[in-house]
Amino acid sequence: MAAVPKTRRPELLSKLEGHTGTVNRAKIVKGEDAVITVSDDKSMRVWVKRDSGQYWPTICQIYQAAASALEYDSNSQRLFVGLGSGLLHEYKLSGDLNRIDPKRTYSGTM
Image (tube, rainbow, N blue to C red; front, side, top):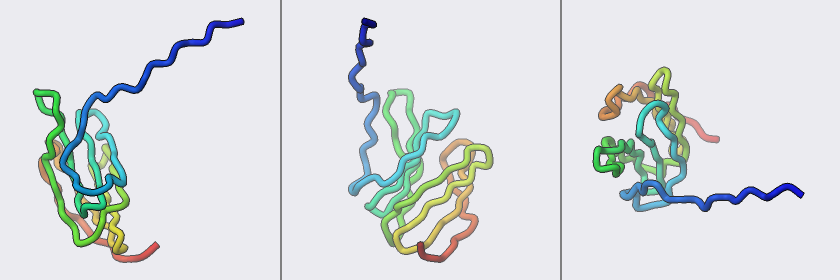
């Protein structure tokens, strides 16, 4: 009978602290030590890993409703944030991950 490989226990590598509500989505930014999150606290944040090893928010965008959907395309640097109110915000994320440029806001419901 073949030996059963030992599985490693999950290990917490980093903790993102700052949201005050449930985090609904998180996306890793391809090729960067960065994560984008959206939350019930009505915010979207871009977190970048600093030299200390901790992640700090470089962008914190506040909305009128809970942020429930998130999509990011690293090739075009387009960021889409969907709100519980039915609005969808489109941004372009700067190459240094320190700024978002609003492009369009779409209105609708799902």
